Length: 265
Image (cartoon, rainbow, N blue to C red):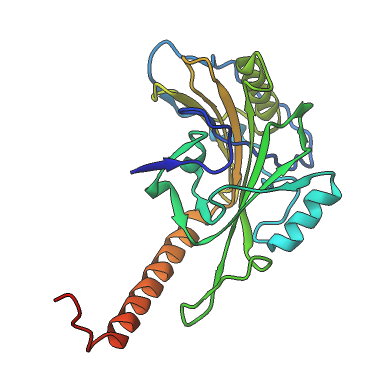
């Protein structure tokens, strides 16, 4: 089942999101990519891992698993403004930003945390159409979920650049691709999907950056740039188990309280 996405204009299929990383340390020269945005045939190309810069990826210099309160202080100190996200408790996996307004159930964990949405952010010379971040709740040793929003932890951030703000979205994608490649080497490109193409980079800790262009053959084209911590999927799997156990316990309690109720039978 696919549901409406949480934070973009009400269009049909659309955008993925974008996030920025800190760019650091020893200058190294890399081969930049000249990969065309729209490939003539589907292919997946694995590139030389030695071209990847040995550094840690971060979203806007925010340490992974900072609390929501800590993260939003860094963002607002940098000029961001806090906005309202729709479906704000549907936290996402990386594939959750493949489209702007539809996602499948496997790409998110409903009720597992908080989605934040922000405006007033600039990346690599571009004013971002939309900036979002996901914060996952913590789980104690007994499997109990702490649903305090301020204590939820940051694990995923992304930016979106769309055709509402940019006429030549393909040029935005190509420019960002060249800049990222100059910093981190040539990424792994995947153009086998008819709707979107991606380029992905991994750092030495397996944190990832993914640049995507979507709606490739349609009028409403978008680019997203996402940054995610390495163990995000594992943490999301654990959260799904905890949520399922919570729901089972609540259902059992409800059955217990209505064990003598035979109305309507």
